[in-house]
Length: 127
Image (cartoon, rainbow, N blue to C red; front, side, top):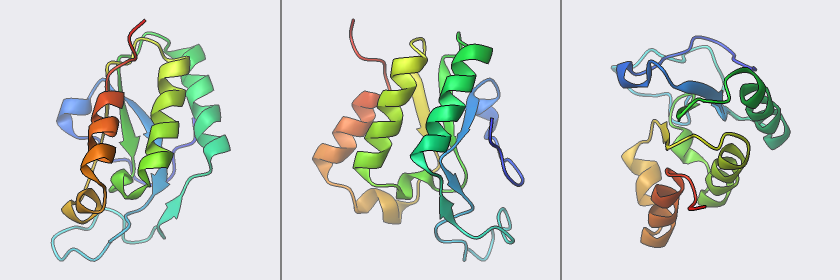
């Protein structure tokens, strides 16, 4: 599993698989936040994300929640988030919830249709 830097896990995600899809924060200028001061924002390569999902499928196949790491993973395009969610559901069939940090700036840049699709991908596809 490829984890870089300090990992911040919301209390509700205590039993979730942490999956890096970004490093750092896309904004990283909040006066009150000191989570990722020394990490330049980077989007993880899909190949690395898929390798981490494969490893998780071997190590913890019964996991039912995934939290996409680092700060504001919702900055990723709806298409990229869809690809990641589909890969998670393909390899980790028991996942019921995919969560992540999201800023209002990145929510408002997605269409209603994209937001509905991403919401639907937070639950596994019907068999």
